[in-house]
Length: 217
Image (cartoon, rainbow, N blue to C red; front, side):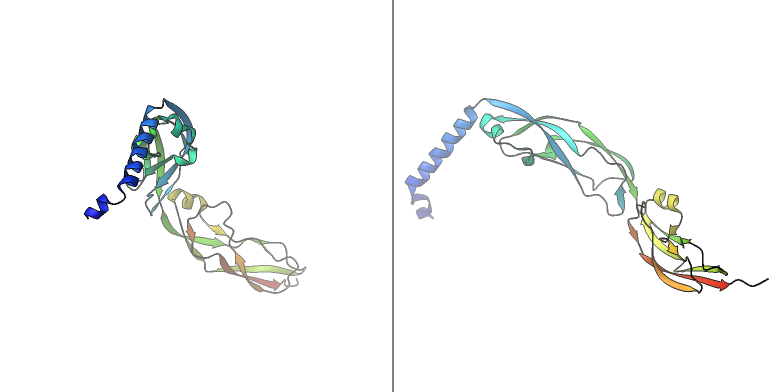
């Protein structure tokens, strides 16, 4: 142990002297300040909830420090992050604190704005929604559609209560029967464009279209 402290004393003394000199050089510099737009990260969103209002993705942060440090500082070295793990359903107001903003050593946060953010969370629900086939076109002359069946008749989706209530039912993409003169059964993709489901139990369903020849009067 003694050898560790007594070996290379000259090199260690030089390193210590250099560190002290550097510290006094930096400390003796005039301090200056600068402002950056800093991205705001959100972590810890409860798994059974989703964010339904989007807060500002940046805040303005002004920092101060020795001129040498400030001149080499970039926005990428500063980050703001809020922990939402304790958030409740509904509107949550978060007051941003200095400890939420990470900066390099020697850089101090002076002020920032806005100093609070609001985040709205809603609980994710599951529901069984009916599936409706969207059949377009007309069969061949002298034929007509007598029945349309979908398998499965219901699919399970997850989303907010509002999303599920507004959708009400899930439709297939258009199934064109133009010119057909016989029944058909096809796998058809569901049309989820515009919906904001978090998950859906199936992407395709089986659609059976029964086509009969019209009776002659």
